[in-house]
Image: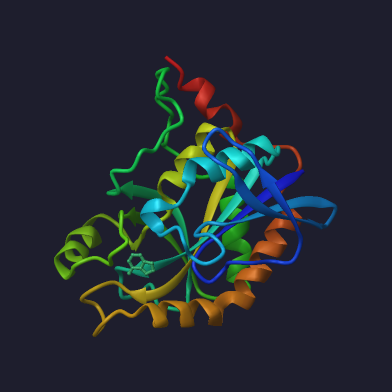
Length: 248
Ligand code: HPA
């Protein structure tokens, strides 16, 4: 089985062989390595030098590259801000739903009508694995991810509003999760809670976000590694059929 990992801020490189994949949306650099007899393809979401900020990440190219190389399951790693006191910086969050405030172009289907069912937006099998693995090492919460466009952080008033709707806020889950689903790829997200959102702590700094991420990175590596090992070969979730079932 081929498995994709899309890493976010603080996750720029990994050991392996470089493979460039052509897509209709541009060329994508992936790092390929073997683990537990599986082929793993890593993409740095923000580029090697963080040259693609959240609103300019090549979401379509990244997912199409994974599709073209035959990846069937993706783990997306990212950082988020917490909007709930009980969800602490330094913990892990595995979203089970999201609300999109990005306004981004979030489909591959512009010339045919596909109303993809998002009742269960993430692969339930991989999501469960991530929660189980993460619980061995750190505190884990599940819930709603509010997606913003960025690249700026939110205002206090925005967080007050968003906190009525969801639990954490981040900039990269959308459209990544939607596009993977459209391509029939199982997708689940592993988030490092790097800070309390605006207004819930004195000030926010990117240094702090990076520092918390770096502290958790050894656990993130283990969680991803164990999930890669245990993702089942036969996919009995419905992820691969979602787009076809949504075709008008
Ligand atoms: N807001 C949006 N995205 C984020 C945050 C935040 O507070 N922290 C890490 N990514």
